[in-house]
Image (cartoon, rainbow, N blue to C red; front, side, top):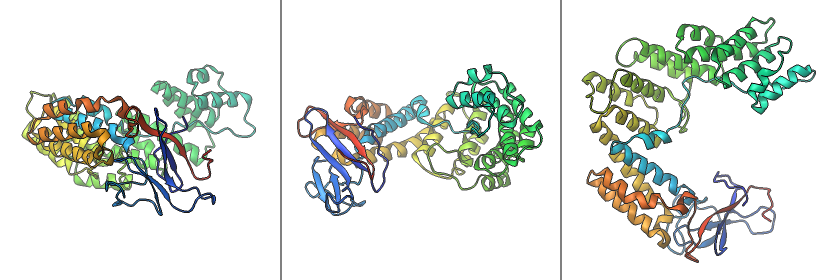
Length: 417
């Protein structure tokens, strides 16, 4: 099997094939080598019919045969993931936030640069060996080597190896050694201050962290760490949200908030810290939240910069961990409905081969409308357990026995063979 990708680009072509009968089709622009007229190969995921179009399908393009939506890239590979998301939301709604919590990314509170130093011409053999070992990920082997002559790059390599192994105290000592060397380039100094400041911040030594991070330069990592530090410090005093000015300054320092699912933002960080604070105070299912805590968390919801699935899932997991079932229902009910509606809009679920999955999602939606996430999750269970969907494939309408998936991906300039 050739490499598989669903990354969209103007030159990407995907070969779809059944693993049993061998029926196949291409999706993507015709190769620009004169072998074919300009155009676009499309494939309807509903009736599983190939089409030769004059241009890539637009957002409202319909299959000429069955009138189902057709798209410029394969969408069926996302079906199982979408079912997984819906099942996890229903689980949280029903009182089990763990499946949804498992899907949430670990967003960094403080970031650093753990890339190994680049080799340089004229490096002595001992330094070459050290840097090479760190680059290979052989951190224990790197630390077993004799220390080369003291240099910023030697101590940086050792600090990275120690941090990768979880030896924070020793990593700090090596960063201290870097900063004690003179003369030190501005780049090396900024990197060392960033790394040391990040380690101090993670350990809760906010004053020491601030002293380093103010000298860590203006990289995206340094700006984020300074912004994160302001939020942490703002929550260290008082029982509610930080002062509005703290959040304004933190956002200005961090820069534009990314909507990407795993990136940190000030709103996401604030929510995570507030949930941790409530849990540390003893909040749990069966222990009513105080009026003040509930008001603070409601206010924190408005600090999220985006309303993506991941942001709302983060809110849902937080409320569920605190046992605030009314808040859980408030978030989960519309989120689950939106997820089910999006699934029912998928072209692959319009076709005969996945009619049972369509029926399962529709039954789950009916149970949601009755306010019953347990029954909704039960309705979804068989579809969620399908092996073909788990393998990012769908049933083949041609033979009825096999499953169609992405067999090959060709980028512009590659040979389709």
